[in-house]
Image (cartoon, rainbow, N blue to C red; front, side):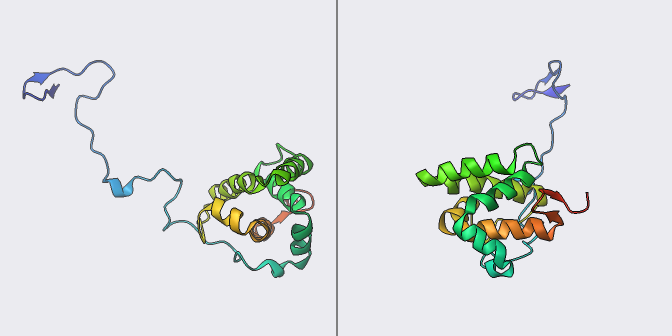
Length: 155
């Protein structure tokens, strides 16, 4: 039984709670998987491209290769490295590849609960595409993935 807005007792319709629900304060409600306070840091910085010189060169001259490797792992093998790289390459001809790759940065962050740093994912990819791809590549490599075969090393 619940009380109407006029103070009269009423019975709740079927399927509805009879007592008012208590909700947490709005500060605890977040549309994201984790809060900024609980998100972990990236294993390397955005501008630490030379930590892996080979990947830095490959990404500088052919970013579709690095993107394909990242996408294959983020997609858990459902889309091949070659297919993802080809789509990225075609979008690069239109200048829209950064929009495609920022989606994968967001997915990667969601899978590993990484902070959205130093700024929004699409802004990072728009302003610093090569650096962001290198950072994502290093993050996966540091988490034990064999980037050449697209899965965890030793599996």
